[in-house]
Image (cartoon, rainbow, N blue to C red; front, side):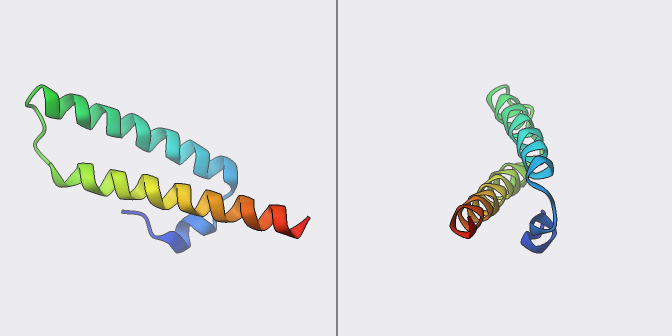
Length: 69
């Protein structure tokens, strides 16, 4: 699990990279679940919430950048 304060310190490019990585992991977890190979079911929830956390921070950064200019 990633803390929001850690994410706010990262650049937009780093956040986008991490978002892409989490989406790939989410896909792999869904694939494992469908094939019955998923052992750590709690990881699905953690990944989903981390994705939401990153999207929220990206939205906040873009809206603050738009209002600043």
